[in-house]
Each structure stands twice: as C-alpha cells, then as structure tokens.
Image: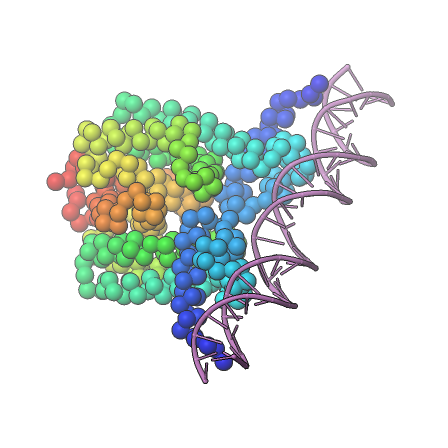
Length: 194
Length: 194
DNA sequence: TCTCAATGAGACATGTGTGTGTCAATCGAT
DNA sequence: ATCGATTGACACACACATGTCTCATTGAGA
C-alpha cells in the first residue's frame, strides 16, 4: 500500500521541474546524477520515480505539453484578431519558461536521433500556432508573400530566442514579449512606419 | 620531411568540413568515430590531424570564423543603407551554410560549459552585425523602441532558423533570405503596410 | 624498384554515464 | 513503540567515448 500518493506526485512534479531547468541550462550533457543532485534527491530515488532517462524525458515532455496546452486554451485564440492572438501566444510561451524550453530541447534531440521529423505529438502545441498564422495569412492580417509554414518557423524562432533572453535574466517577460510581437508583426524597420 | 604539405591541408580542410556538417546534424552526440567515418578516414588518422576533440572544435571555429569574416568583408557593409546591409548579411550567413551552423553550435556548448558568456572572439563575426544594427537604430532605419542588442538577438535567431530550413532542404537560400529580410525589416503583419 | 611517410586496423587504459541491486537508516501511520 | 514504506549511500556490471599505442600495409617519390 502506498503511504501518500499525493506526496509522491508532488515529488515527481518537482523532479520534472528541476529536470526541465537543468536540461535547458546544461543541455544533453546533464546527467541523471546532475538532475538528482539539483532536485535534492539521491540518484537511486530519481531512478525509482523514473526508471530510465527516456522515461524522465517522456515525463517532462508530457508535463510540458499539458502545461502549454492549458496556457494556449487560456489564450482563447479563436475569437480574437490574429495580431492579438500572436501577442497572447507570445506571452503564454514566454511565461511558461523552462517547461517550454524543455519541450524544445526534447523535440530537437529526437529529431536528430530519428532520421528526421517524427512530426510527433507536439502538434498539440504547434497546431494552434500554425492555425493562427494560417488564419492571418488568409484574412490579410499576415503577409501572403511568405508561406505560412515559414512564418511559423520564424515566429517560433523569435519566441525561443526571447525565452533564452528571459532565462538568462537579460530581459523580463514583458519586454521580451513586446519585442517579439513588435518585430514579428511590424518588423524592426522603423523608417517607413508611423 | 613531409611528403605533400598541400595534400595534408586539403585533407585537414575536408575533415573540418565534414565535422561541421556532422556536428550541425547530430549535435554533441556525434563522436570522433562518427566524424572519422563520415570523413572517410580512420579514427587514428583523425587523431593525427587533430590530437583531441577540443582541437578539432577549435579548428572548426577558426575555419568558420575565417570564412565568415571573408563573407562579411565581401558584403561591404560600411557604405550601404542599413536595410541593404541586413539583406547582404542574411545572404552571406545563409550561403555559408554548415560553417556558420558549426560556429553557433560551438558557441552554445561553450556557453554551457563555462559559467556564462566568455564574450569570446566570435565578436569578430558578431561585431559587424551589432554595429550595423546600432547604426540603423541611430539613423532611424531601425526602430528605436527595441534595444539594439535585442534586435541583434532576434535577427540572428531568424537567420539561424532559416539556416536550419535551408539545411533541411525545406527552403532554398534565396527564399530563406527573402523571408528573413522581409520579416525582420517589415514584419509579418501585412495589413497596415503598402 | 626501393624507401619511407602516411594510413588503417585494432588493442588498450581511462573516465564517465546508465541502470540494477543491496542494505541500513529514517519517518509517518497505527 | 512498532511496522512498513521510503530513502540515501554504495557497489556493481555494462556500454561507450576519448586518447595512446603498436604494427602491418600502402603508395608516392627518388
């Protein structure tokens, strides 16, 4: 009989959170021992919660996607104008912080492992972003001379870089969001605009 | 007496080139054995040319920076308008392909190792970009409400993502350059412009 | 043809990360 | 206070990457 399943869940969540930040910070070179130490548990205990490194990564990905899902749902993209939707998404991702960074990291290393692009379940997160951009292209609020999938890539590139700036304490979430939204929607060129 | 120093240089350059693409593709997990095999030499020979992994990475960084230096010089940024300079830089980096990607990778892993930011010699490459952006902010051709260093980060983020799209055969250098320049200078928002 | 530098193949030591297992200490619930 | 689940501290086997070394083979130049 398990003594306190709630406690176990809390510890598990704590480990996942720690793992996310360690992974985002030190990259793949972070070992199970590193993660265990940072999380404040022994290596043995870490393995009791997650029987393998893959299991830990899978757990992180799952938790990150659940979290992101919730944030995206909370942004209520469906009704709003595309420009407003872009702003909400940017803030949502930057506020997610380490969890989003962890997801990116896992996705990248998986892409490298498999031949290419498992086009995996992270579409749960990417899908809404893609759809918003496609809607923008369709209704004229986003430019039509750059393909929507390319705009998606460039937008996420901006968000991910901004996330690193936030993690590195170089920018606050507010400033980073504002910069990404401003540059993505209106560009860095200032001369020909208002 | 060395038989053919020229041959040795050619092989060395070939190894560096192979290493750059392997590293860019498989990340840090690429081993010396992987690189040797891809380069078509034995592991022993690889170690004869580069006595350690660090030496190989240093050689790659050196070669990449030399290459990029040349491309940047060839772009003749000093006279031209900032918008034109941005376009030339974008094309230069994307045309450099794997060499630029290798440099990014090395810079990232070094950042992780050392505490943070050795603010290293890659300023040889980043410097001209920073200066161009600062000039743009100063003369009004780039917006002033986003700090120049943030604009630098966002611009390089776009270029690096575009580079991945080019490497993955999803975009040609031309299309990728055009997309980056268009989005960075004028934004993805299409409604309020021309 | 002969010579010698360069190469490939492989053994080897070392370090490190993963995953398994054991055992004593601990800590909460009864 | 007692019981049992949980934990931490090891020890261990295993896989793999780095770096060094030896030795036979190859191939271009004299």
